[in-house]
Image (cartoon, rainbow, N blue to C red):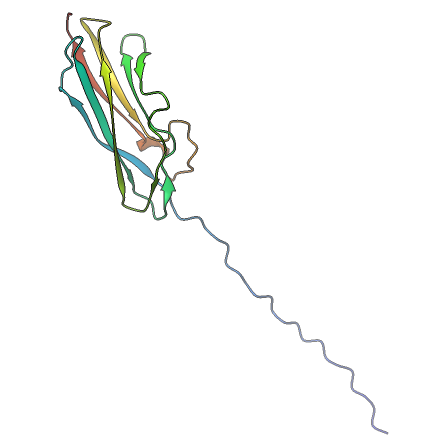
Length: 142
């Protein structure tokens, strides 16, 4: 009688699933402004910035903050705190925020307004170095 031929084991290549590479995310702070450009003692100062998603995927902005710093000591003496909430931006999309301060301290000194996106670094980005811009100005007497 014919002999049975044992089955040949043919390896089946595993389905190769390419590793998922996260699309790049990069938040950039652009177009900071002060109005008036040189603050006046005890008058409202409106400051703002635009946050842009330069990455290839939608992302949240994280918590943003605008703060006023005494240049000589680095002390933050006015801040938006947690008032500037996170929003989601698609690639190329922008979000403009502004805040209002009244400055009446540290006269005849230099101050710096710092504009910061993702202040707590909660968003993993391809470049963490462009989330902050500072604008310095001389502050006169009251």
